[in-house]
Every structure is written in structure tokens, then in C-alpha cells.
Image 1 (tube, rainbow, N blue to C red):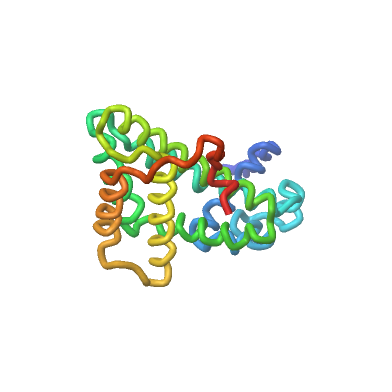
Image 2: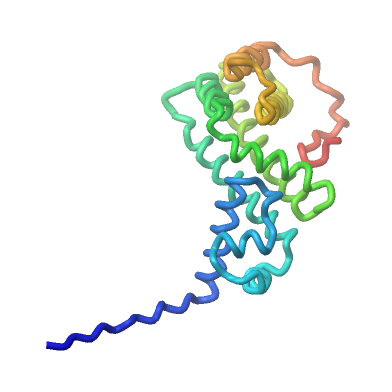
Length: 219
């Protein structure tokens, strides 16, 4: 008995599906090789399409880089902040956050951050997104610190400054680690610095007339 086989024609992707495939391919490439690896040709090769198709769906590369960056670092922030457990105090939650961010297992995201800071010098669209994401991190941490101050758990009163210092320490140590220049136990050093920030009363507050600037406007 003669049998025949039917070759099924692959289903044509909708424009939304194609755009999502290109976007997810760019995210995967950035996680592996950093934002600097994102070119039209590299993304096209990653997802198996022509460079012209990538350029059709993502014609403005500066905006594309910004969106990829925001997706990667935003997902990390949501994951880390979701780890704050109600049964633990703010101090314990912050210690856990520091350990999570400095355990060496997030170098892919660290590289994305470092390259975004550098590329943002000439890419204002990306720079604006970097400032937004940094402000979101700072405000999320400041919110927890303010709650701890209200509960009498910590002595720091300038929670915006404490949050800024904590982020600067984490970002700096992680950036240093990319070139293997960092303390052997980054998390331990960070915990010590964090303890000082939480337990040391701040200097007298500045004049009421002095505005409190957000991270994105500080120079």
C-alpha cells in the first residue's frame, strides 16, 4: 500500500509575534554578551531572520537598546524586591538583598548596567531609561527604609541618602568584580557598611529651603 506524507507549511507569525521573537532574542544576546553586542546583524543572526526584517520591526536602535536594557534590569528589580518577606524586619531583608545582588551570580545583569552607563553618554534615550531605572531602585529601597524608621527599627533619618549610598556601594562592587577587582567576600563588607548606614544617626537635616533632588538629577 502506497503512503504519502504531507509537508505542513510553517504557520506565518503575526507582526506582534515576530516583534516579540526579535525582542526576546535581543534580550538573550544582551544577557550573554552585553548591550554592546546588540547590532541589527547580530540580532538577526540570533533569531534566524534577515537584518532587513530586524530593521523593519526595530528601526531606531537607540530606542531598542533602551527597551532591552529596561526589560532586563526591571525584571531583576522586581525579582529582588519580591524577596522582601513580611515576617523579616527591614534590616534582615536588606541584608538578604545585598547578599543576593553581590553573590556573583548576576554578572550578566551587571555587565548590562555597566555598558548602559557608558553607552548612555552618547545615547540620550538610553541614558534617560538608565536614570529612570536607578530612581526606581532608589525609591523602592527608600520606601522600606522609611518604614523601618517609622517603626524605630533603624536610626537613619535621611532614608534617601541611605538608599543612594547602598546602591552606590552595590553597583561599585559589582562593576569592580567584572575585572576581578573586589573583596573576597563582597557581601560581608556590604553588610558591615549597611549596618553603619542603618545605625548611625544622620547629620542635621539641611535647610528646609533646600530641595531634595532625585537620583536622576544629581550630578
